[in-house]
Amino acid sequence: MTRKHFFTLSIAIILLLCVLPSVLLAAADAVTNIGTAEGSGCGAGSMTLTLPEYVFAGDTVSAAISNAGELEGEVTFTPSGELSAVADYSMIFLAGGAGTGTVTAGGSIKGCGKAELLEVSASVTVLETRMELENPTTTLKIGDSFRPIFGFSRGEVGAEVPDVDGLWASALQKLVTYEPVLTVAGSAVSVSGSSLAALEAGTAVVTATIPGTKISTSFAVNVVETSDTVPVTTLAVQSAASMKVGDSLTITPVYAPANATNAAGTWTLSKQNIVSVSGNVFTALSAGKVTATYILGDSTKSASCVITVVDGGPVAVTGVNLPNEKHIKVGEKLTLTPSFVPSTASNKNGTWLLSAEGIVSRYGDTFTGLKAGTVNAIFQTEDGNKVATCKIVVTGSGTVTPPAGGITGLTIDKSDVNWIGDDLSLKVDSSYDVSFTAEPAGADTSALSWNTSAAEVLTAYNGTLTAMGPGTARVTVSFNGKTLATFDVTVE
Image (cartoon, rainbow, N blue to C red; front, top):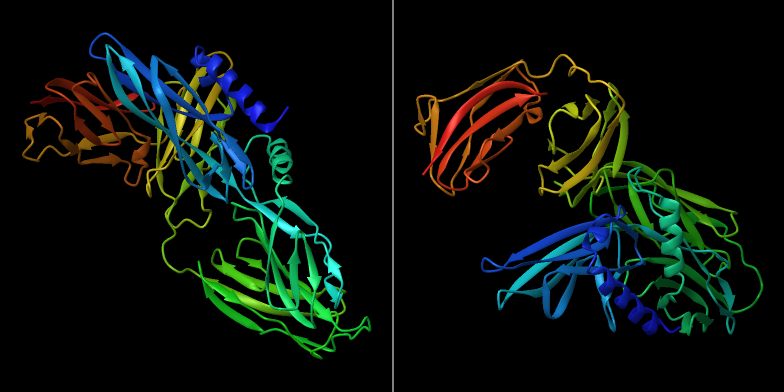
């Protein structure tokens, strides 16, 4: 079966699943975003785009699209971030490098005799893939050829990634079908297909890159005139270097004699995540100190440089992750620690929201099972408003009282002109931040629950009220099921 035949069969299967959107939505390993277009009172449609939750760089990503309603014409797919299009296949994309990739699908739904535009996006987290030279004997005689062989390894992944070994095996199977492209800096060697040809005495730096990705590695090739071995007698690198986060620095080993045949080597790092290295180029990742050691290919000599990295300014949050699902028993505690992308992000603050009350209590990042049930714990970052969700399943019998402590009292400041006595007055489409103080002082007020009696009139989230439409709604503020304050809001 050819690749195109396989893709055609895949599309047929996807179209068959279009009549079963609930099945697609139940997939536990996918992120699903839904856009809905409403007809003129007598029809509605929705379009669902599904992507995997995690892939490795170099992997290909298949998007699934389904709809409820009548889809008009073609759906267009636009990749962004770390995803790029694959020629001839509109629903398959290549993951280029670690980060976040997004696919946006655009189309129209027919309802009540007219077409309505609909757009929906879904994102995938792309994990790092590293490429390394597996046969590092890179001293050649003029006229010799050398075919480099590469191995691949995965970057660090957090505990929140499910079945990472299975995910990596899948990514590797797809990755190894790509032939690295070789480029050469220097005249000592040339590229001939997937091999290198030694042309003249000297040293060249070869870079291998997986097409369409950020996966690459560099290594040095030494070309000598004869097969006689000329060992390195002196090897040195600068003893220290300073960098800022995000900066790059080239550290070039110096050796003697100039015609040494074993001068090619590799860098090793005393710890990870402070700097990365490709060839002789170092990139600062996070503040800290690391020792970089250059070791000759035959291990006869080495030289080290101590690199100090300092903060270079704020690092923006590009994503946040939580475990997909956690199980606890009634009365048990669970601590959820959000994992930020990148790990060096400057602002790691955020707020929690529970999809239902009474199943668990929360204070800070610690959750306690109160009774059997299921609830979503949602974390939203302060920087960038990125969102991650963990489903908490509580099992067991009976109920428990929320743990002591936390917020015991709440006082709302009603001195603002919008307050008329104990009632608040707002205009449609306006927002209002309620001023309040909690007891005891310094309590985590993000643990408060804000609820309104009429969502079509007013919504409330972490003390911010949004006026949706005219009417009156009652706001109830509670902590772990205990009501701390109520007030009425009139929207005009």
